[in-house]
Image (cartoon, rainbow, N blue to C red; front, side, top):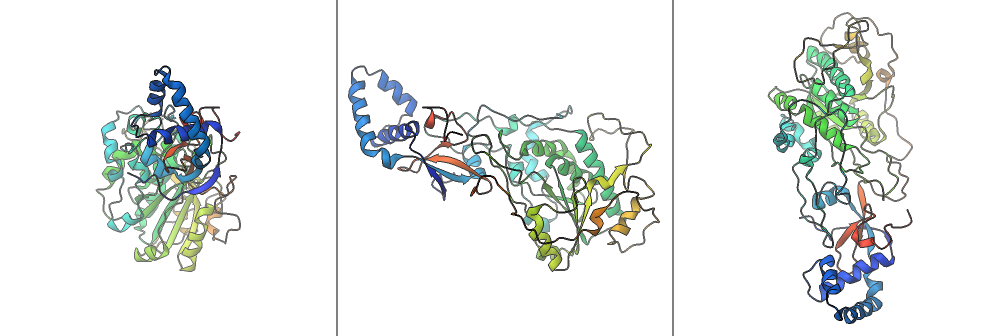
Length: 450
């Protein structure tokens, strides 16, 4: 069990009557040696007839003498630690998550227990940078509950549904297109980092898995009010789980680091948002040299010509150790114009007679021009026509970033933390600020005027 008395950061102290009441009532029960929940104790007290008055006087006396030292503190705790302890959707147990593009394929829900192992990289040298955190969430069960009012948490593996969307289909084909180039040249000196929205990054990795070995780095859990919509990334991984499990049987391949571009989305309000953001884990320059990597290709979304701010220092470190970093937009890989588009049967895992190939520059004649824009190949390449598209990524070079890596509108808020009400006297966690209707502040149904 995670220690509830671990290190906290003080955010504020409150003296609202409802919060004080929850604290001194529970403290008085503890002192009397009661093993009852607060709700049951209230019921017993109300049924005691004339004894209620005397007991109420005792409570008033305790409150008068001890309320100051019993005031709960609002402290910040690591969000993931709290989810592991109290459940994936703690603080919002009556809420769940929704899935767009739910797959109609048969779904073996029991396979979710193998998700973390089925998506583990085959090569032992990559496992130190593999982050199974997200894939472990479906089979996890709460280790504890709030003393005052236990919450019924429906396990995530009973809620999760695989998804497959048109944007995932496109990303899958884009990953295939890049993999065809890498496989043709047997390129072993490159590392690919894909940084799209979570579901599209997973789909890109699935499409590229013929020639590249996915290295997933999703370091959070879903939550109904999560800043990062991690449940969609998890649902995409569940859809492609059979494909990734099969890909583990392939031989050694260059690594493809898989990131979720939404990992540090804006965070504004403790009461309505759950901060499940996290920092990316990417290989160090020393690890890349150990793997024989001298080139990094960063795949980004749309017409972006720079890296995510939280990767700036890493890319600068790569360049400082003579590892070349280049950027390419996933949209540089496109279907050939004038060719009938792929029939959307809601699946990529069921064989069909219709399959649309994507090419660098959107045409078979421009596909191999990739090696002109990214001259890392040691083998001769077929002649190719220059694409008639803007390609700013080929001249990319990381430069020192000025703004804060993680701009936040909540001053002083640590990344990936949640505000919790904690008893000053016992150190017991009473509940999250996120749950405005929690028993510890039910007197007015709100907190802090937010």
